[in-house]
Structures are given as C-alpha cells and as structure tokens.
Length: 187
Ligand SMILES: Cc1cn([C@H]2C[C@H](O)[C@@H](COP(=O)(O)OP(=O)(O)O[C@H]3O[C@H](C)C(=O)[C@H](O)[C@H]3O)O2)c(=O)[nH]c1=O
Image 1 (cartoon, rainbow, N blue to C red):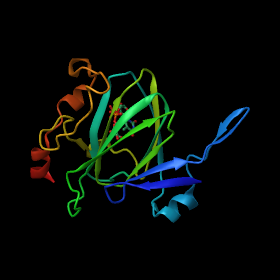
Image 2 (image 1 turned 30 degrees about the horizontal axis):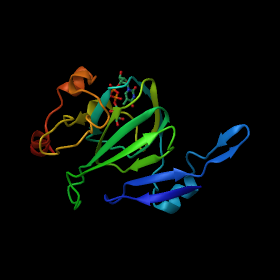
Image 3 (image 1 turned 120 degrees about the vertical axis):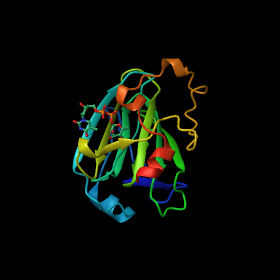
Image 4 (image 1 turned 90 degrees about the vertical axis):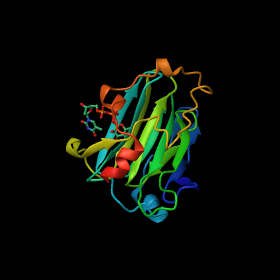
C-alpha cells in the first residue's frame, strides 16, 4: 500500500509506503506488482542493487544508451539527495531535473522511468540504498553527464548540506563524464 505523489515531471513518482509500527518495530511493503501496475508502472523490475556510500560521495549522472533502465530507489540507512534528469527527447521537461531527499527516516521511494540520467549526493556516513531496475546492467551501454554541467545547472545544495566541493568523492569515471552539450551531439 502506497501513497503516490505525482511530481512536476511526467512519469516520475514519489511513493510513500504505508508503515505498520508496533512494539516490535515496523513492517512495510517496499514493492507490490499489482499496486505498481495500478499506478501505471507496468514494466517489471529485473535487477536489485544495494549500494553503500560514505558522506560526500556523489554518484552519477548515469544512464544506459540501450537497455534503458527505469529505477525504483529507496534509502534504507542514512540519506541521499537524489537527482534525475529528463532525457526523453519529446518530453516538455526535456533537460529539466527532479530532486528529492530520500532517507531511512522519511522512507520515501522514487520511481524514475527509462530515459533519465540518475545521480545522488550522499549526506551521511554508511548510507545504504536499494534500487530496482527495469533492465539489466550492460556496461557497454553505460554513459552519463558530468554532475556540475552548466546547462543542466543542477543545484546540489552543497551549502545547505554543508559539503564542500573539495570534499566530494567521485569515481574517476564520473570525473570524466561528458557535458550535456556533448550528450546532445551524440544522442
Ligand atoms: C551499476 C552496476 C555496477 N556494477 C559493478 C561495476 C563496477 O565494478 C561496480 C561499481 O559500478 P559503478 O561505479 O558504475 O557504480 P555507481 O557509480 O553506483 O553506478 C550507478 O550510479 C547511478 C546513480 C545509477 O543510477 C546507476 O544505477 C549506476 O550507474 O559495480 C554491477 O555489477 N552492476 C550494476 O548494475
């Protein structure tokens, strides 16, 4: 059982699971095929990912050019500031981004359809996220856009979260991602 919040980007949803608390702790359904189908999320998930990161890690912005992946993301320990960028050519929000705080406290879940670049800034140590994808990992089709692209102009809220740019931890791959204008030339 979920409350569904539509967002300013068509097809991107925040799902708030119903949390059953008692003197033992809590129970919640984190995914239910029927409920998702009724929302309009009809593609099956085929892979589950579990990622742990230190505070200050920034992963992304990533997407697969073929075998594009829809994602259902949730944070089970700590918190992340999650960013997804609409790359659907015919979308009226093409190039626009959606941001949301996902944490073990708010238990919010984010669903993004295929053709979105995805990334997140990690706001606390030993943060763990779980996310399902609607297609498999194909490293040969991995691509991305640099996190601080001037055209996308994403506000990562570094000041708000008191994370210095010099403290950010990115993979060497992510440090070399192309910018949005290069992306526009290729795809
Ligand atoms: C994504 C992925 C990675 N891997 C292996 C490949 C590397 O040896 C290792 C770390 O991969 P990577 O550095 O690409 O992990 P992230 O930077 O977290 O990548 C993810 O970051 C952003 C936020 C995403 O939304 C994507 O799901 C994904 O691109 O895990 C796998 O075995 N399977 C996978 O599905």
